[in-house]
Length: 201
Image (cartoon, rainbow, N blue to C red; front, side):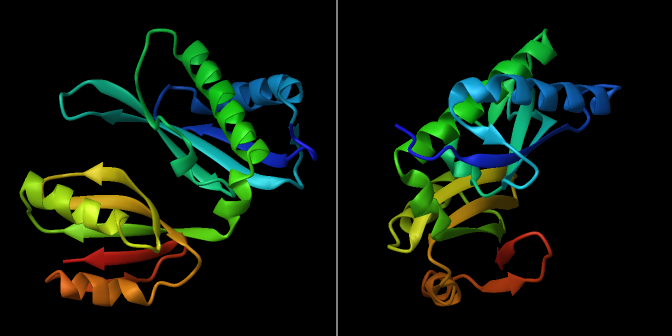
C-alpha cells in the first residue's frame, strides 16, 4: 500500500527514433499523464524529476535496439530492462514500456526501496584499455563485492572502453582511487556538469 502518493515531474524524449521525434515525445508524455492516476501516483511540475530518454542503439549482433536513459530522482538500476529490440509498431511499444516503468517505480516506492535509494548516489565510471572478457568479469564482480557499491550497470561496452553507472551507498568516493590502485589501475576524477565521473586506466 502507498500511504502517500509519490509526485513526479515526468518528461519523455525520443532522440533519433523518428523524423518527428518532438511529436512522439509529446504523445508519450500525454500518454503518461493519461494512465498515471490509475497507478496510484501523481504527476506535477513540482514533483521529483523523472526524465526518460529513448534513443536508437545497435547490439553486439547488429540488431536494432531502443536504449532507455533515465535521469532524476530514480536511478536506472531500478529497471530490469534498459534495452529492447525495436519492433514494428514503435508508438505502442514505447507506450507499453513507459507504463511498465511507472509501475516498476511505483512498486519500489510502496516497498520502501526509494528511501534507501535516496540515501545513495550514482556516478559514471569509464574504464579504458583492452582487457580479456575474464578479467573484465573479475573486475566487475570485485567491485560489486565492495561494501560501498550497490549496483554496477553497463552503459557502453566497447573493445577498449567500457562505461558503467556505479551506484554507491552514501556519498563517500574517497576509497575509489585507492581501490583501483590496489588492483593495478589508476583512477582519476573527471569534471562533468551531469554527474560525478571517474576514469580508470
